[in-house]
Each structure stands twice: as C-alpha cells, then as structure tokens.
Image (cartoon, rainbow, N blue to C red; front, side, top):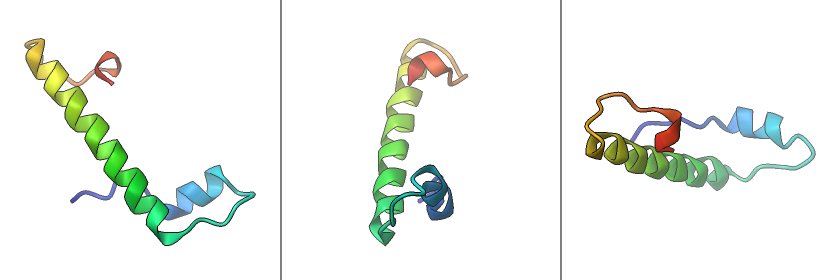
Length: 55
C-alpha cells in the first residue's frame, strides 16, 4: 500500500484538534479508493491520463 497521506499534514490542516493514529490510515484508504475509481473512469474514456474531471 502506498502512503499518500501524512499525519503531520493532517495535524497542520486541523491544528485545533488532536489527531488519532488511525485517521491517517483511514484517510489514505479513502484517497486510494477515489484514485482507483478515477483511474477506471479515465480508462473507460480511452485516456491514459488521469484528469481532475475523473475525480
């Protein structure tokens, strides 16, 4: 699995809250799912380039 999300960046984004360890993993899983769905959409449209509109 690829770690796209870093806990330190989450802490910066929500600096007024503590961040539990499992938040980074859960967020990373959601992002990977979004990217997988977007890459499938791009392929179905005959493209090899992932674009913002695929998200």
